[in-house]
Length: 427
Image 1: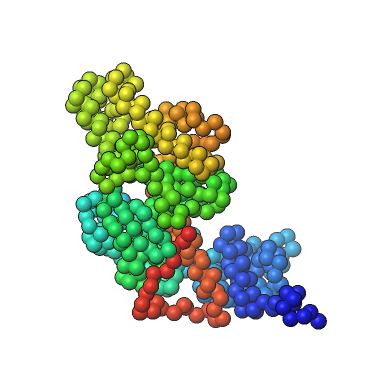
Image 2: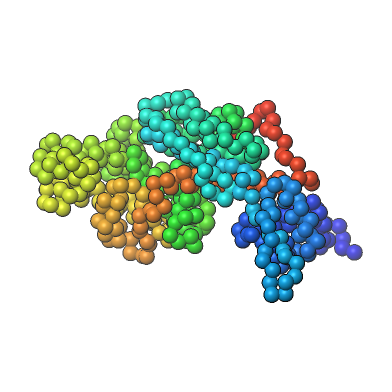
C-alpha cells in the first residue's frame, strides 16, 4: 500500500464530472458533425451505447439537440436509425459594434446564423451616456423577439473602440473618438438586461473573425492592422489573442515615426495616428488641393480624397506624389516595426488607405523585412468587427453550456442574482 503523500495513489474522478464531460463531447460531435444517430455517436466517441443513450436523453431534455427523423435504411433493411441534430435555437447571441458613425447589432442563433440586424446613427461628439443609451436600444430590439429562449442562454458581445479591460468590461479610454475614460460598459449592459456581457476592443475582435473566416485558418500567429479614424493593431500569437499587461498590446497609434516630435502636442491622439488617421489624411489632401491646385484639385471634384490623391500622383501631380511617398514610408515603417516585434506568419491590413496604396506599401515593407512574412488585405469584409464579436460571443456561450451540463438534472440555470456583476469576458 503506498505511503501517504507518496503521490502514487489514484484519484477517483467525480462521476457527475465524468458524465458532464461525456455529455459535452457528444454535444460537440452533434454540433460539428451532425446529423448523427446514437450508433454513430457511440462509434465516434467510443462510449458505450447505453451511455450514449443516457447522455442524449439528457441533451434532449435540455433542448440542446433535436430528433429530426430517421435515416434511410441500408441494403439490409434493418431498423431505421433516428437522427439527432444540434438545436441552434437553444440560445441567442447579440453581437454589437460601436463605431464613429453608428451603433450596429446582430442577433444570431448558436450556429452563427444571423437572423436580425439593426444600425442606429451616432456622432463622435456624443458622450458615453447617449451612446450607451442608443446601444441599449439596439440590443433591446434584438432581444425582444427571442422570448422562447431561456435567459441563461442569451449573451451580449460588444466590439468597442479604444483601450478595453476585457476582464471587467471597462472601456478605459477612447481618445480618438469619444474621449471616454473608465466607462464600465459591461456592467451597465449586464444591469440593464440581466445576461452575460463580453466587451473587447474592436480590432481584437476583427482578429478573431480573421482567425475564424480568413483565408488560412491554420496559421497560429498573425497580426491585423486597421486604419480609419484611428490606427489599431490586433495580435494573434500561438492560437490566442495577445492583450498585454495594460490591455495595450495593439496601441500602435502611439508609435513615434519622427523622434524629433516627441513631446509636441498631438490633440490627445498618438503620434502615428495624428499623421495617418483618415480624417487627418483627408484634411491634408484638401489643403494640398487648395495650395497647389493642379490635378489633385480637379480630381477632388468627382473622386474620394484618397482616390483623388493616388490618381493625381500617378498622373504626375508633384505635390500629390510627394504626399503619397510620405504616407507609404510611414506606413511601411510602422508595419515593418510590427513584424520585427511579433514575427507573425502574416500581417493583414484593413482600411481604404491600405487598399489604395497596397502595392507601394508592400514594396516598402519588403525592403526592410527580409524574412518571409505575408502581407495581405483583409478579405472578411466590412462587417469583420461584428463577425468577431459574434465569434467571441459564441465561444463564451458554449463555455456556459459546458457549465450548465455539469448540473445533475436538466433544469434551467438560476436567474441572475440581484447584484448582477459582469462576467469575465472571452480572452
